[in-house]
Image (tube, rainbow, N blue to C red):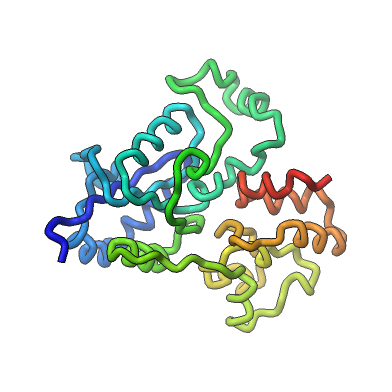
Length: 258
């Protein structure tokens, strides 16, 4: 039996804060967790935050400023385990969908009316996933994360066990639910390359998967691209759909496609 509770910190970077809200909305289950962990830092939930040594750091959001890059490295330096929660932390999120395409400073100026060197106290940068700056031990995907999936993962981590990583696409969950394949109907569904965990929520209501759980580990992005190309979809539209939630990882996988 542990003599002291595990120290946990929950941090938010660039994102919508939906993952942190999901954790807060699990308040009934969190009461049990609070008997075995001490939440040292969680700006959304408490004001008496302590920035000390951590057993587990949960990180939400992509890194999009030099200050955030410094901060995430500082958190990692005092944490034993780093968990990226949500697709922004895991893959860069929607804000990273054009990563590597060039023209970032021009797009920035169009939105803010100023260049990256002219705004704020910390220079903005093109959004990148947490893993581009620090070593990530575990990932909980989702946009936002699923409460039950998070609780299962967190339970295993605080008990010293490795959480189960989703190693299959949404297509498998579609089969389990008896859904008819939307790709066979000519609908540009991303279920073939998207990590499972959502229960095939969109295809179950006859809507295509948009990829909000991020790319699963063995996703064959090139095959998906050519499949949709053969079905008559335009190259740029296909790339945009793959990049939409795949972020920086998708950008890297699409780099060699003309």
